[in-house]
Amino acid sequence: MRLTEDIEKRIKNVKIVIDSESNKRVFSNILQAFRKSTAKDLAPTDQPNIWRMIFRNPLTKLAAAAVIIIAVSFFSIHQDQDKQERPRIGKVKQSPAEMMTAMSLKIAYRKGGIEAVEEQYNKAFKQLGPRPGSLSAKQIFAESNGI
Amino acid sequence: MLDDKLLVWKFNRGSINALSRIYEKYRDDLLRLAAALLNDIGDAEDIVQDVFIGFAQSAGRFKLTGSLKGYLATCVANRARNRNIEAHRRRTDRLNGNGPVRSNLEKPDQRLMDGEELRQLNNAMAQLPYEQREAITLHLYGAMKFREIGVLQKVSIKTTQSRYRCGLDRLRSILNSKVQK
Image 1 (tube, chains in turn green, purple):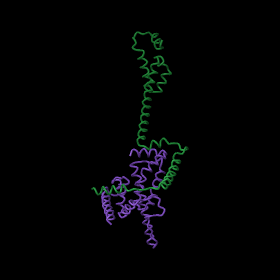
Image 2 (cartoon, rainbow over the protein chains, first blue to last red):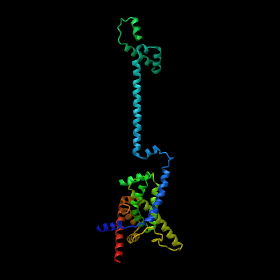
Image 3 (spheres, chains in turn orange, green):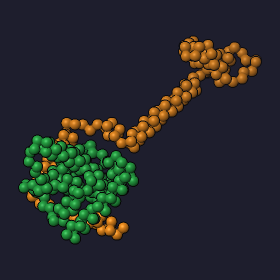
Image 4 (cartoon, one colour):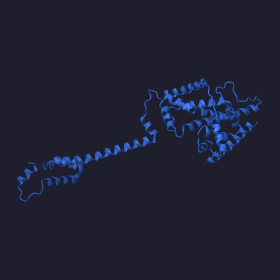
């Protein structure tokens, strides 16, 4: 074991003397190749391709995918919320009289057919609340006109 | 290892200082490795220069997966192997054509000054089978693990370890016999 270590040490520690002039010459050749390569790679006309940079590394690839998924899900959730909120606001603003106009009934029919018209009727009557049976025609008209 | 990663990161961004530090850090070991594999100081220097030029040309897109020293040592070993095959072919051609056989141990334009110790060791190394020489030098100068050397030599880790041990034993006996003489 000791002998093996001795010979290993001897091989490792063998001295090499380098002529400084030739060393400089060799390094200048290497430097020339390096400058040529970097001048080509980092040319000012070359725009850095952000997608290439992202797809070069698996970690950045994963991060980019996560960002895209989060952005898409956030956008879709926001869209759903808008869809849910918009009709509610419209309904609140509309008075029973407005709901029962020919125009609004026509719009409801276009949107959801006869079922939508029926729903609009029900909602309009719900807003008016339960009516006593002894209401005069004058009172009904007055209420349905929102006065 | 972390230092190498940082150097490679700077090197990829065009830092000359990083390239210079990498060159200074690994030049000696790579030269010793190439010299031991080729038994020719001039060829060794050429190969190391070629490896560093290839490395410098990869600036901006070099991706370090293992150790930098291991990568450079593998490049040197591959080039040394190719050069040995080429030299062997040329020698065979010359022998077939009855041409003059010239020793390549010392070249007149030798730029690297090799000491007596290095010459002695390389001469002893030259007597080992190439696979054993490669296993020893890649492990000691390239700091490569036996598993990595096995991958390079396309053999199992056990075979690499046995090549290493046998090579060292043989090298010791060669060097000892020279001392006794």
